[in-house]
View (tube, rainbow, N blue to C red):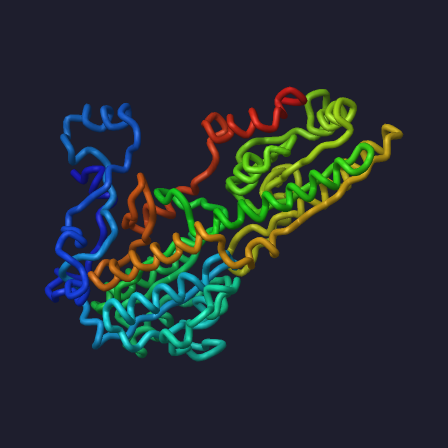
Length: 441
């Protein structure tokens, strides 16, 4: 019977038999042995429950630790590597591209690195643009800018065609930078390559500004998004306070997970109402949001409201007319504009006109260059991704868990969306900071 630890086992193309070129630069203590692992549970009670099953340490879920190994699978001087960025923009994409290129070039001696343009479309049989040759000169300075040098796109491509392209270009390691949809596509590529007995390692680098991948504490770009969201909330607060009965309404990213809205609300500490997809919101009635806003304005004459883009969708979506984007994601109704008009009409009906200042900084936030904490994180994630790929691991994504960089099977990272627990410590902190429970429930 498979143990819990088996579900975190990383697929390998074969045993590493080559001495890593990094051994010429670092001492033996800098390299990890192959079976180094990180305990996945983080509290004593969970560890005790795992051990109580009678399976010993094998029953304790663990993640493989990321880092350089003394032996590698690929000879860097004789292989081609590829990079692709997919999905929406996110702070740090150019940092990741640059760091992957520099680590491959200077650390492992790889001299042929291809950047496939416009997401998985660049791997299709009909790419919009040819692959870009990347080297340290080509990526110089790109980390100072937002966006992605390679471009991006949404939507599935034929897996067979993508593997045909990689085989034609003799790619041995593909780095796929993206969120859950990108990672599912990367996993399909890895499985098809294994079916064809191709020596192709596929390594994911987690890019989801919503921070919703399982077994990964933080995706790159998330900290930058929270910081810029905090600045917008500060502006909304100033605008709201500057007029009589002013409301600063801020719509932030977060389709299914409200982490940006929650953390930005905590960071600003000026938010009075925070709405996230994980917690249902009632607009009307004695305990609804509109009545709560009325009470708040009577008491303080201003309010700041933050709403994640996925909140209220249960109210706004028509189940009979759901539209989807090229990646198959449900197109969300603009809850910010809806909420602005509902607030205005509600108070107009009470004969109390007010001033609503509306902010939607989504595209501004996601196109920024990363803040310092994300810039460092991008670099270190990329280094771990290169170490993993050169060691022959595949169908995995690099992550960070319990203070260590880790390897996570793609299937585990995307099996369940990480969300805010309405009964957990994070949401409790939001409720304490906003005080919104005193107005409505």
